[in-house]
Image (cartoon, rainbow, N blue to C red; front, side):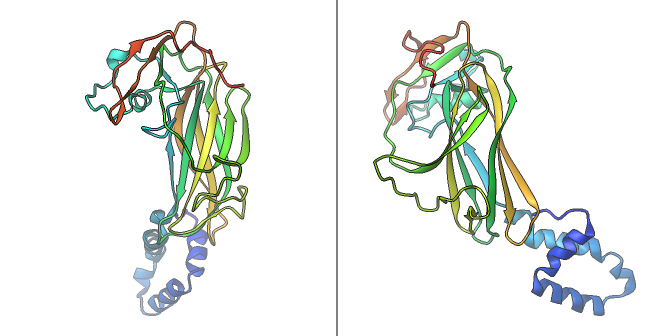
Length: 280
């Protein structure tokens, strides 16, 4: 947690830790006046090192699929196939390469958000999870790729739906397989707010289904939280990500599963058509 420029801010934080405050008092008694003048900056630096940025939570995103597993996600890009990095590894999912090279989901994709706190960190309270649309004017994709394959699920996730066309963001609760899905260990069930706590050594895993049908978008996700004992609100942002849903003449390609993964080659195919099965 970075300490601000206001000396009252770091002083209040120091006072909230009795051991640090006691050491400070002893140091003041035995310190010459010339050194005391430099103490504010030194204390602020020391506090940042002990209770600083290393204690902030980690927020990471996986987009738009679970690598090597999710066969339902189609991807699109405006880059030439010849511009993609070449690979001879059949275990590599070519869709990940396409997205890393500037592509995105086609009509639907899934963002997995992992919020974790180090075992020696401070508990956090997540009070808001919110997407932000950056643009709806991303250039049309020139081609789309569909794997025509995939694997099963089985986990349960705290799930949201983000509709980029109308801007709605809906909390769907816990979604999983079966009639009575169980909560995955470490996944909170509370609404974002004071009860949504991620403790040291634990994590929260969120799943965001993103749909795009009428345009091509760029967007990002914000996680807003407070650190235990500190009322100051913090924000971590992941992204930006791209979601495609409109094209006049995109060429469709498909592939098949190879041994241990997907073939890193593409061939033209009439199976996928632009806006052919856009979610409602």
